[in-house]
Length: 116
Image 1 (cartoon, rainbow, N blue to C red):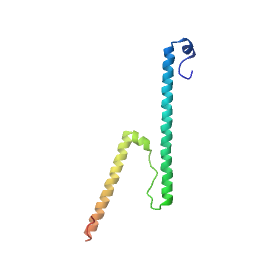
Image 2 (tube, rainbow, N blue to C red):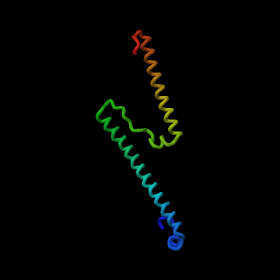
Image 3 (tube, rainbow, N blue to C red):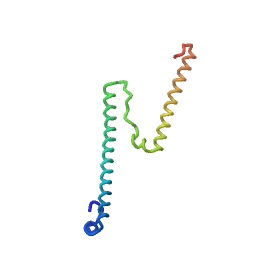
């Protein structure tokens, strides 16, 4: 049967066994429904990102909007991937800071007033 109890156990077995099988089936069905809902929500999240990226680039030539290059949820859930993403972001920030510091140093070497 679909709840995980045989025909004989259902009709001739202990009622408690059937009761637990029904409770287990309901919990499993609830978990599957929640998983399907989360999957649909995440799909909508990706669709929203895709549509907003396209519209942003269509209406603004200077748009920097980009579709994510890696999965969002997997990165959030996997500690190793999350650590790698944080490290990439830190390197990007460091490179930006170094470029700004280099530009300011070159500007000061040219005799121009410092930028506050």
